Length: 313
Ligand SMILES: NC(=O)c1ccc[n+]([C@@H]2O[C@H](COP(=O)([O-])OP(=O)(O)OC[C@H]3O[C@@H](n4cnc5c(N)ncnc54)[C@H](O)[C@@H]3O)[C@@H](O)[C@H]2O)c1
Image (cartoon, rainbow, N blue to C red; front, side):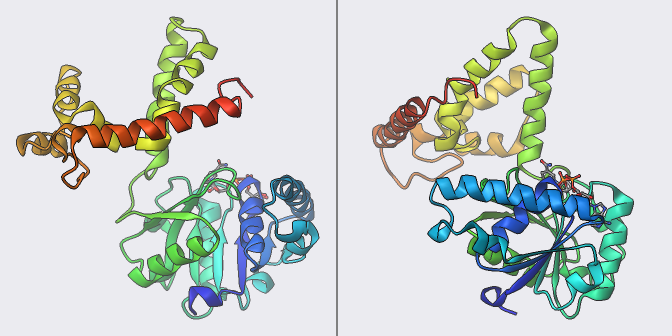
């Protein structure tokens, strides 16, 4: 099947993630079989989907404001066998417990015909080391972010046996859903964003434990610095603006080395100031590059101010 022909998907596990992922598929016009182990979980999921759809409708994100139309495409069930029959794509969003995932993969592998992809939403389990499936080429990780119906990113992480076709199909399907897929070349624990987020959490734990700063002031500090820069320059291009020579020296002073950055510095690729760093600025002058960045920073600041983003929720 071509991604355009995905007409029906199954989402297995209707918890926090599964219900919102099902909503995303249904919102894009795809029929969804939503599976859980009990009717209570399914009832709760359908209630949550209705209330998030109502918030989406308030923002004009539901075509025609027709919440019932989207809901009518979601078919809750406790019967995995029936629900996985004839679907074109499967999302696995059962609890982050190896045995539960393993059992779910095995059952899906048995029920699903042909090349139907099984996309696991695991947060970091190395499913490739324990999944017992006859067709490992169709198993991959597609990792969504809470709340999936709003946050665009889906990290697509193939295993050693995943077929390139399955990866490309999944990435294209995510785009059809309005998501932004980022494809990794292989499995690493915590993927991209959680790896970074975990390091942030460690720093926050240290600061909270130190008693050197009030908790609210940590957020005030971050919102008034990184919070403005991150959406514009990310965490990698940001280094080009610091200057890779300085980045290297600072990291050295903490006792860290990095071959990748050291290599750039050796080549004289220092970032914006040399029009080439980790990014290539295509021969623009430093002033041109900084002006483009600063216009975006100013716009970001105005937008954040206008929506009171500096106030806590
Ligand atoms: N919560 C997050 O922020 C987040 C973010 C990204 C990924 N994930 C991952 O998504 C997956 C689901 O997480 P969640 O937060 O939605 O968990 P959750 O506990 O809210 O939902 C899991 C659901 O699966 C159901 N379930 C249990 N066994 C099942 C089975 N055999 N078949 C079908 N359904 C079954 C449970 O009843 C529950 O409703 C986990 O792998 C988690 O690591 C979570």
